[in-house]
Length: 292
Image 1 (cartoon, rainbow, N blue to C red):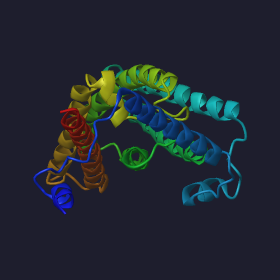
Image 2: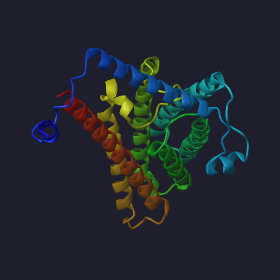
Image 3: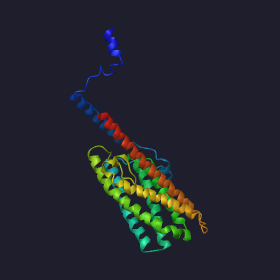
Image 4: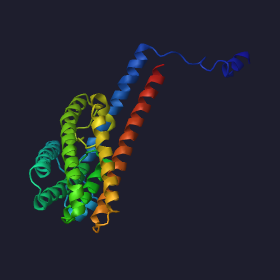
């Protein structure tokens, strides 16, 4: 009875727990790595199973099967997607620079805006195909391209008016900065992804994105000031456009619609980035507490 009371006493909550040996710690780590490896294997197997196209792909492509049947084909399509983003980012940077400093023509601006619409619409289609083939891009960074395509379409329909000219240089300067940041992101994110894939910490079909995700914390935090500056520039664009709606010469619906689109982009980008930083910081604190 005395022994039973002693074991059940709250005064000795750890009396039955034996400290783990070095061999047990090593075995636990091995089992965790094995479980992680099995999860990746199941994920790759699932990526090769036929899938029904989502609503967007069904509307664009119909019932065409977009599942690629080999790893080589998946990787080739992913690499083509990354190259497409890189090349178009450089082209958009050059054209926006030309429109901002060399040519003040609504026709050239229309070509630039049409290229933006085509670029973002193409990204949404390609990303949907990649998601069907195992890429794990999701959430706001997918929706971001839909909103950007809508914004570019509205800019394309905006007639050459006093309101357009008042906002034109600010928009082109923002486009230049955005293309520059996207080029930086591609250059550094691709290198980070390569290292993480080699270590087995990331899936081979993971993509670079315009925003900030948890896996970018290691070595890519220097991008955060550039990203936050771009986010607040989007907010500044929204404020500028909403102020223009009160102008006595403002008659176009595009002014308020572009302001709303910029506000949605700012909120989505800023809140998502802050959430990722908060989650990462929380994980680091939990890890430190466990070690203590």
